[in-house]
Image (cartoon, rainbow, N blue to C red; front, side):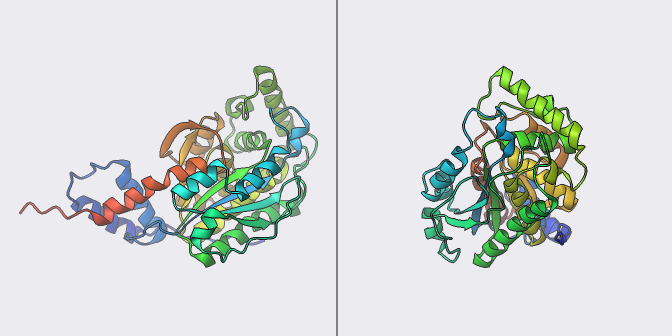
Length: 351
């Protein structure tokens, strides 16, 4: 498959935004990181007047074979249960999406369960999509394999996962898209994400593996040991990491990020799993990092390692670890504020 070419940041738009910031009715630099964010957004989009009006959150779901081991306090069936909650508009991501005026799309990339829903037309208008999320059934398989025993997926399945993300973003762009929020659901995916981050950053699994759904000390040690075993067995290398220890939803998120970046669309990252997916995307095209915004810092220990690897600073730190795209959605008002202050403040004229 062809990995999208990602453009460079538009330095002319960035300089224009910088000049505007320096001329607003405030001391230069007084808005701190808000000013830097507006300049970055101008560079991503090519427009210093860009505004995050048309918003979408994509929630990719998939199950993980590593749950054959006690790496989670809840059963794998919760993945399918939560997908139904998303589609019913009852989960945290739905509540926050409505508040942030963001449409929702739920993608089954590999859930070990069946859904009696027809695909929801993406053509439904923005208001309808906030109340009734679109559903995209693109199941690759009923979860990945147990990556402590074999590769998580085949090379072909890894390519399928990336393509799912690219295809879904292509469809969202047809409906009108200014900014993309990425989220996920998958029991066991903190184990996969921690393995990815350890493999890519070089950190020891014990440094980047957290309690996920609330593991006790004994089961946390087992989780770390499984990741250590897998990394010794697989030796994941560039572009093999997804296949060896990844997840279908993680690959789909990576594909979504790559394609959005290729189309000058800013991508707001959520927590640990989403940022692990961004690290996978970075393996395929390092330029993707210029279009990524870290919405928040997760309470999971591996998140800091992944953010450092990507050179990103989170906008929020609320000790969240839910996933679904919730922390990323909460960053939308800050992104809007960055562009409003750039474009709506008056010009300083003391002459």
